[in-house]
Image (cartoon, rainbow, N blue to C red; front, side):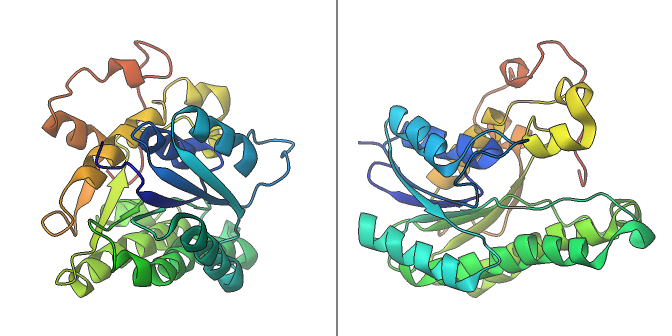
Length: 272
């Protein structure tokens, strides 16, 4: 038996990228994975659906429940949580991974894109946390992990893309506030962010193959998440973790296997 055997993990945006990688990693430990994402039908530009992710998760050794969820829609979120609890009996872990990105300045950011980023990133994280909390409060070692950056309140992280930074920092503010709010009840709230760019569909759309070649694989985030979620929820909360630092603390010093192209010069991520 592992720490994750029969534990139920609700992951938003888990049809591809970091969310899917975390799902597969925990599935290898016997977890039940709720794939809460929008992509039910193949996308012309993005690979993967909730159903293909479910196949990979079950192949890895876990049980999967694919559910179509737009985290902007309160009814869809609450219905997905209800289905998860009905199917698996509860929720032990929530990973708020779903996110929208547009790296534009103030004059170049249309309000519909501003709204999209805030509705998915900040509001979606708050809503999913709120919907899962009644079940997390009953769990044995409950964790919420937001894929969001440390709160570095420096001008350089805001000036180039203030709308996006505000939306991502909103996710991190949920960690700061909810860690304090639920500390006595034993629900952990932590953030995880990569030191370098991660090879995801979003990065491919932003910088193409050139940026992907200077990235790390999503598996580095998945392994870091595994170690964070393994910890005692009462003693590990309110942290803003960086993937590299988590792995080094676990004695993993050779990070080269995570490089998308072995030996490539890696690009640092934002906010670190």
